[in-house]
Structure formats: C-alpha cells, structure tokens
Image (tube, rainbow, N blue to C red; front, side):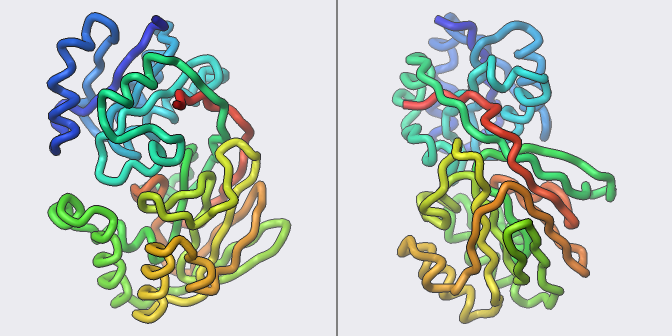
Length: 298
C-alpha cells in the first residue's frame, strides 16, 4: 500500500470521532498517525508529510481540517498533484466529503482511502485581509462566502451546532440580521452585482447536501457565483426554504454567473469564510488556478 499519513484531532468529540479513535491501534500498522495540537497544525503536518515522502495524506476531521491539509499539500510547487488527499469525515457537516461521495461511516471511508482511486480537482485561490489586516492567500476546495453568511458563522454557538447541525447557521443568521452593514460589491470580467450575501462555489453543495450550485463541477475550471440581493427576515426565510428544497436561486432571486476571477469589496468591515470557517476580511480576490490537487474518491 502507498505510504500514507493520517492527520487527526486527538481531542475531537462526537460519536464518529470516538469510533475513529478506537480504530487507531489497528491503523497504526498500516498508516502513520499525526495528531494535531493547535489550529493550523493540519497544514503544517501535511506539508511535513510531503517533505517526508508520503504518497497519501488523509484528513480525519471536518471541512476545516480538510482545508488545512489541502493547503499544506499545495504549499509545495507540485505536491498537490503528486500526493493524494483523502478524507475521513468526522465533522458536523462534512460538505466536501459529500461532494466527492465519501460516506460518513468510518469503515467505508477507510476502504476508499485504501483503494487509492483518485481524481484531479481545482483548488481556487482566495486572497484577502487577515485579522491583522495583512494580505493572505489560501486555497479552498468547496466554497467561499462573504456577508451575511460569514457574519452568521461568527455567531454560531457550539452547543447548537452539535444539536442542530446546519440549522444552527440559520439561527445565527437571524441574529446577524440585527446588524446593519453596507452591501458587498462583486465584480468580474463577465458582470458585476451588489448584495448582502455572496457565495462562490467550486462544488455544488453548501451546508450539507443543499445544491446552491447544481451545475458546478470540482474540475471544470470555473467558479460559480451567486449574489443575493436582499437581507431581511423575509429574505432569510426564502433562503432557508430554497436551501431545504434545493432551489435557492428561484426562491431568493439570486444573481448567478460563472467566472474564472472576481473581486469583492465592502465599505464596512466584512468577514469572509472558506469551507465554513471565517478566515479574514474583504477586500478579496478569488481566482481559479487549475486542477492542482489530487483527491481520493470512491
């Protein structure tokens, strides 16, 4: 079997995380296990695994852990193509795992890792302002967002997220509506639009198996953009209905198009999220950089 490194959070809670940790002893004779010890550690561990000659790096965790590990692979000039990223979904939502068809059950996810089938996907690059207002660049695999989306993420309570899953974000969204902020300006070569919520998809799904971008493909070389023109109780309710029924654009009147590069600006301080985690603030630029990451798939 290919030389494989598994990156995992030893403090992760939940039934899936505990079930995975119970299998660690059995895995230790086939995989090298690397526990994280701080936020951002998965990126460093993935980068180190590449330097040590591992052929597969497995992120055992949620979408944030997967994103960190992917960025660690992409830190090398050609590592993302030469070293395959695998996923064992242990998070609350696990959107990217759903996108590539990795089951939520640990034994089934492990079988995919061991089979070794892979494909190349796009890894769009987002450039934004960090908390210290310095320019920072980071790749994402599934989705980026700014506006009401990221403002809601900042308000999500851990206890509600564990009990309610994706619905916790809708609760936080209602809380975010209490704050009045300037709209986001979005501009690309194809068109421009203004709205309080912007989502940029590399894949189809958002917040679970909800298809905000039904025509998206991880390896097609395009970004799918949706700008939502309203934010209010009615708009959020329509978004929730569209989210649950799989037709967000019809319910919300979203302005949607495809591009390879776009810029986002806002007159007020506005957070930005990648894969469901806030990473910084606007202004930001997002661009397609080609199929530069190999992932293990069913």
